[in-house]
Image (cartoon, rainbow, N blue to C red; front, side, top):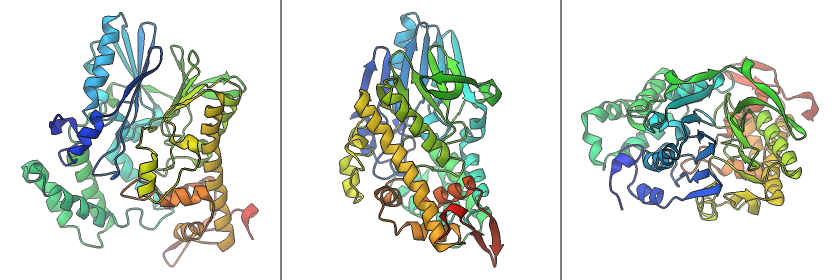
Length: 438
């Protein structure tokens, strides 16, 4: 096994992560459509996630969709890109399904692939997301309208990360010492500015060292430039890139996109079909449900015959072994399918997420209705009593295994319901929507 820790996101990743990465597959799932399997370990922060990566050719253009996180993937990506360049492809177009770190760390690879023409297309709403450390901070600030302390218990998490980093040789490098000193100096009840300062230091020095998001080279795609396009019975908005239609679904993040390939009847839904949604306050439960519904309709019509996303991974996500460790069962057999193929599988795949998001929304609204005016925390507590299988699954996806945030989901549903808000004695209270008042 290659022991080069430079192939991992940071020098504090366990070396067995590299062995797991080396076992990840590369598949040609249709002619000139490559699927490079990503990674989610059992400890989300010690074994950082990396999205699936897709490379598709259309004539003299090659389309790179997501670049992943670990440098390990760079050689695999470059091998495919350079092979197409040698075979006559002249233009490389890169897009990311979203700006989150597990999809974009290898973005600078577009400058190394040797293509005559290189384009990085970035939906304008995602420009603020791809500036990763500051996106996290700004998202937390937006949450303060709904949650008293969105960064609660961050002190404990950072102190745990610092402790786990101590055995690694890189721990004593001067570059990192400032990070550890800042973490150790955090009081048990740190102020939000103190937590934000340490958060930025950790993200920029440890999680994203040498990260270049390439946003300065991107061609921004303003929302006004979107085309309205009917795909069978469903209307989308997005951008045509060669034969591919890039759907702006604004689900997992404000500029989140899915990719439809009509030649292969292939839909790639990025992080729109993953159980931790929404990871941040700027995700949209309504849009997640809407996209799943539209894709289910297209699958029923035979317009989608191959379906996957940025985190379907063999034995990893969700993976029965992983779920067993977390005390969970599959919601449906299709949940553990890496690549849904054919009408029935594709319908089942999207129906799973359509039901999942609808239940999460309805159960949250009903929980709020039962208890009346309440804080976000109060709604989360009431929601946790639900016997709905989808709610139980969502509530169980906590750290360190997966970064599910039920409080963020509840806050987002309150926002989308335009629930009225008032502050009483420091408590942020929301009134349930009329249809769910009991």
